[in-house]
Image 1 (spheres, one colour):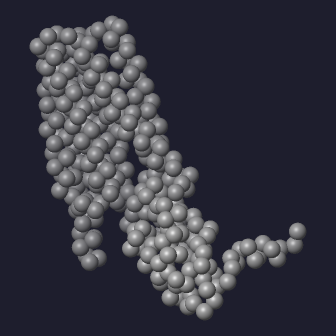
Image 2 (image 1 turned 90 degrees about the vertical axis):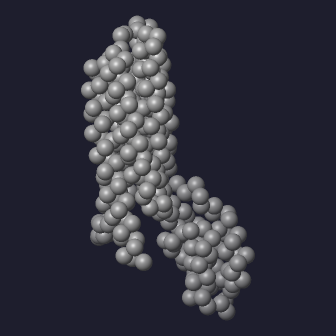
Image 3 (image 1 turned 45 degrees about the horizontal axis):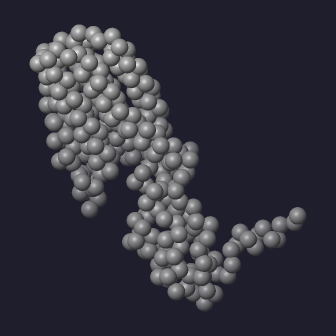
Length: 300
């Protein structure tokens, strides 16, 4: 099983690196094409591809760093590095959206000519590149959350390329240049949605927020209902290193005759089977909460 998991991990890492190389390389081509043709839609899509290139880079970096063992200074390893980088990138991308919207407003007030032919060819090549990246990631291991998240970003790039193709077609057929900044606004909004989601999620994780799929009330109820020896569950704290690595600590008060080890095994089994939490720290207390007794004995 370990060999199979390592094979999937290595294969997914290669797919991420190939998709990153494709997306990053074409982003530079799209910037050059946008400047040459004068198309804001191409430049906006290049900005969108920049966000996705960074996302792919973070996913690839996370796959690489996750293999590094924990040490004395970093007992949890290097998993949080991707969260910090995601937060900084998300903030940066919001500023990119601001620039695109400002430039779009300027061009709507003062339309500028766009070389529709160059714009069309660059957008078509971009569509092909994004389709290749999509195919690479779509064939990856289905349980890799990093890979699935990267796949969603590439789908956003596909939409950006289609928007640029539509804008180029309208310009070639009608000569109506305002379609370029209008569609660039659409792409900018795609960037804003992705960037805001990244900032919100990374901030929640950095603030040790409770993972959205962890219901503390349900955990308490399930443990008390399914394990007869459990009298009370308290001091429950849930957070996550990364979106797919939830962490949990809790205290469990049990009946005096109960075996602590048996209760601990049962608690771990419920957390794993019902809530998919594989890393938990459980303090089993035979009578009452040790922390409360210690607090009562502390001199005022």
